[in-house]
Image (cartoon, rainbow, N blue to C red; front, side):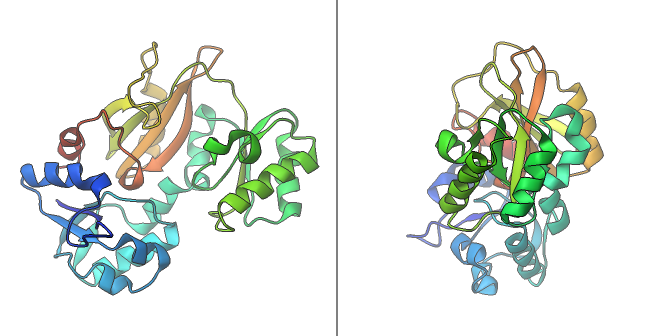
Length: 278
């Protein structure tokens, strides 16, 4: 397994400091490591040059998020160098974007509706379809949860103007670079911190804290049985799934993501993740 990580923007022959520990763990385990220019990949600029130092191999990427379109360009540039990513562009899109995994996981996760693009008429259509009550707003790939009240939480779906103000603020924070469109998810009160589970070829290989709360775990052990069936049905090579304990006493799926671009909590040993991937 070749591990591909972003390069340090200031020292482009070295791994980005955020991924340096994983790169070192890979080398210690006998895996080669290559770096790529993430900024160029994310901008779709000089992609061939961005991957010029990657040798031919079967590879796994561990790095910053890329849009599904940019990931496809990344994979194509690597193929020209006889590099095969474990996760192909179609599977990356299905894991990375909520519409790709929602139908399979609908029984385990909050009811959701989404738009294609950021038109208000389409937003109002999905808002009305979701009914009444509070909701959480995001785009196809992530929320602005650190701006909870201004760009994430919709107190009442039937208040169209107030909901649209939240959507407008999300779009402003994304600098008009909203991924796919808006997603409205029915709000469910949670009773504790999230956990992040890691899955390789449909098998849970690691369970630990969420990166936002790296030293905290819920008091209730997670029941992964229903989730395991969902992950198996999705047929994705490397994903994460975040779970939280709902206030009424049920585990709920918060999100599925492509494992290549899912952050590792600081308290999880990089050697553990590399061993699971190797």
